Image (cartoon, rainbow, N blue to C red; front, side, top):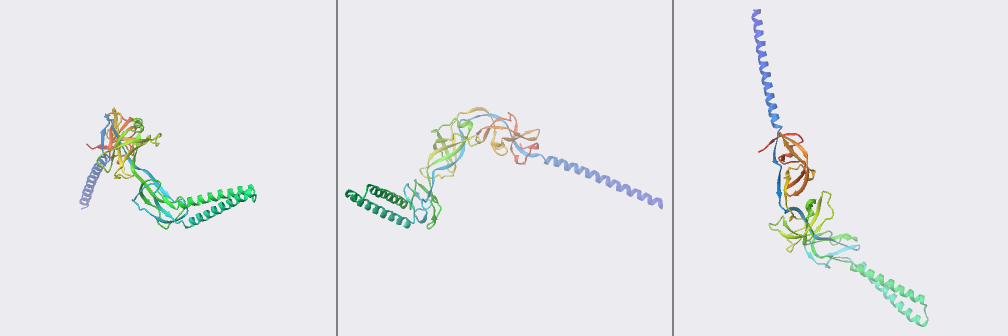
Length: 351
């Protein structure tokens, strides 16, 4: 009986050991499969393009923003209360037109007082002249009377000018774009009351690369394509900045006629410049850059590993950018999926 029990225990231990061995093998196999899947999932999917040389056409496009011909703020020149505003936002005005008026009661009193003082000084001078001829006053008294007239006349002219300042006039033609105050508001000298914008002509302001700006000159004809139109508008270069903006870009302004006022300041447009073409330029797509073009960084793929690479960008040709240093023909650069990459990340290239 005892022998039978021992045999039973030995059998049970053997069965338990067999189950343990099988479970360990299964666990190891499963872990290996998980590791394989994890390794495969670590490969970030990207799209790439092969770096190559191409011929660049002479014309190039630059995007910019339309600016108004002039933008002027019409301000009060005196302290006072706004008695009336004669125009509304969106209304056209002409140079010299009265746009608003300040309360002028106190100023008119000053004008009347100054006029009375001037009249009195003139009357006194006339009496002194008559008396001087008969010896009634001295030459010094006569000179003082003349001086009093000059001072009184200056006071009157100053008061009259201030009286005219109660009328707030347009400094130029345009459209009322904004009203800053309402009737009854108290204003001080320099307080903006209205903003008048002239869009009879517009200036498209763009920034041109240093390698191309030398090919432009003031007076050159330029085609301008507003974002809100399907057709181009003729324009002329009216300004080329003598200094760059710090990023080796030079501000350039192209003036266009806006006869129907259908274009507005702040809209976008594209200027097409004519320039000399170049051949055999090493280029990459703009979307290959990590961040902006000025960051000069791209991911280059070698043996399915993406390496962050510092390059030197040259001329910007719109969708393509010249590369002057850091890449060679045949290199594979990432054009999509960079957001998921860091330096030396394994990748899978999507065909």
